[in-house]
Image 1 (spheres, helix red, strand yellow):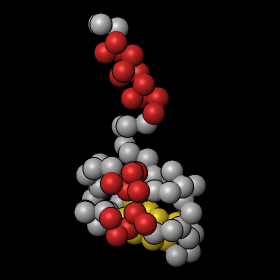
Image 2 (image 1 turned 120 degrees about the vertical axis):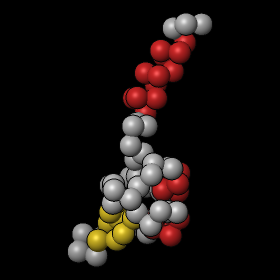
Image 3 (image 1 turned 90 degrees about the horizontal axis):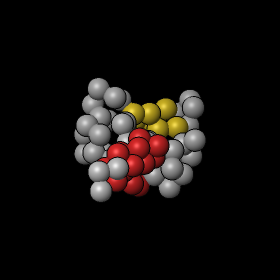
Length: 69
């Protein structure tokens, strides 16, 4: 859950993140987001998630690669 710290907003090189004052959370505009992951790396609460790079997906990719070793 976003803590509303606004750390990600200034770091986004694509200006894809805005702040919803009513809810007190950062909101990502998916049309502007390029998936660089800067917000994910900077988010102190761990609320930011990178599209198509969830932990379970990465672990499945690693398992697939290791199957050929």
